[in-house]
Picture 1 (cartoon, helix red, strand yellow):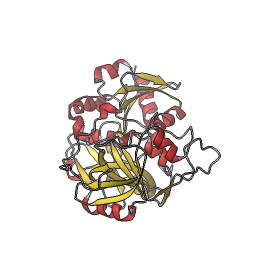
Picture 2 (spheres, helix red, strand yellow; picture 1 turned 90 degrees about the vertical axis):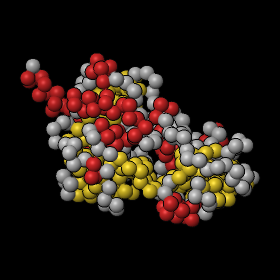
Picture 3 (tube, rainbow, N blue to C red; picture 1 turned 180 degrees about the vertical axis):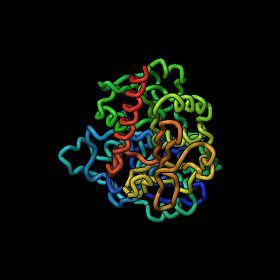
Picture 4 (spheres, rainbow, N blue to C red; picture 1 turned 135 degrees about the vertical axis):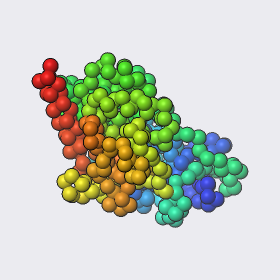
Amino acid sequence: MKGYLHLADGKTFQGHLDGSLAEEGVVGEIVFYTGMTGYQEVLTDPSYKNQIIVFTYPLVGNYGINDKDFESKKPHVAAVIVLEAAKTAYHYEAKHSLTEYLQKWEIPLLQHVDTRELVKCIRENGTMPALLSCKSVCDSNRETLNALKVQEVSSTAPKSIGIGDTHIVLIDYGFKKSIADYLIKQKCLVTIVPYNYSFEKIAELRPDGVLLSNGPGDPKELFGQLHEVRKVIEHFPVLGICLGHQLAALALGGDTNKMLFGHRGANQPVYDMKSNRVFMSSQNHSYAVDQNSISNTGLKVRFINKNDQSIEGLYHEKWPLMTVQFHPEASPGPEDSVFIFEDFINTVKYRKRREVSYA
């Protein structure tokens, strides 16, 4: 069956549609991912909620879908666009092919699309609303997307996992499983709480530190939570990842801007001003912290993207706060930056020892 991808800038791309599609089609924000591998992690990353993902690598799905590389319990993308999807999985751990997995979750797949030309459009005009349809003519008025809602992917009640003497509260804006896994590897007890959990309730849990997770959408949509985030920063050691990085900046008086097409891939070079070295990182975001907005906030830049000089991470001159725009847990991607978790836990433990010595 023929399928048509209609972009908000007026362009249309034709391909072969696999899977069912409602008469009204599927609407989402069109974004692209440049990694050669890692499609399973991308599909199940809550940060991709309601997005139509274009995979730039020519052949996607050749090693299939296994039972252990999921970042959440289900896929969150609205649709998938590829040049070609492998129908057979060639890996000893594979349980399903990519096409079987997408069909199971009723996620439409559009193949044989000129993905190079499509990505050029996104790079030139930015991420934008798109409609995947069976109709060659778009009869939609191409209105902007509804806001991507964190509450659709956040936890609804607190939950504790792991065992350890270090207690970390993870505020769930749509967290990736790998983040919690790395905390558990650091021998932490992790309590996952909903995105709108109040500072008072968090304080009652008596955490040693707090992690602000990744998540989908515009950080400014969570304006109502910024006061709570600020109080958390003022009272506990905090690590912010991706959306959590942006929320920390906003909570302390900074600003964020939407990027033209964002960073999505496993090959983003990041410069660490502290160690004076560059490492590769995995990223997925459409918004960045405005460097001109943080001059009077106490925030200082530690990490910078070497491609476009955008801010990749911050620290605070007074409070034990560290933020990163990239994903230190990778999954998929290079593990060059897993030291971020070690640095955070070391900060938490140091702070804990000081409090005990002062008691």
